[in-house]
Length: 145
Image (cartoon, rainbow, N blue to C red; front, top):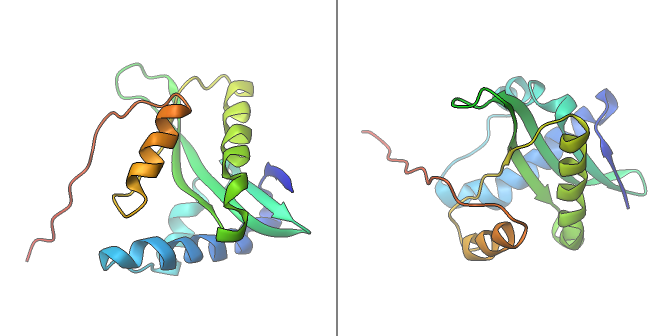
């Protein structure tokens, strides 16, 4: 397994990886991905994202962007997607560790991760806490008719 920063040649594979994530995770919420919109949004975080590759094929993606903390004004790495294909999920932590090392190299001292409320929520909460993350807030969404 190779884990590295993405380069422009990885863009299409990243879009495919995000579509796989959407199919597996977002459809449970009745949400479906607009690939054109995805391309626009992901471009802002593409070069601050990381991929896991097996035999040259992307099998994992941790995408994020650098934003300014509203209170401290310090840079924060904000994860937008962390997804690894089912057969390679055991390498997800390596992907996260690579992103955290990159943040340290960039003098970024805070990372925020997103956790969807789904059937794996408890597992992900426990994982994040074991890795030293603290829960900060939960978002609630309501469809307005």
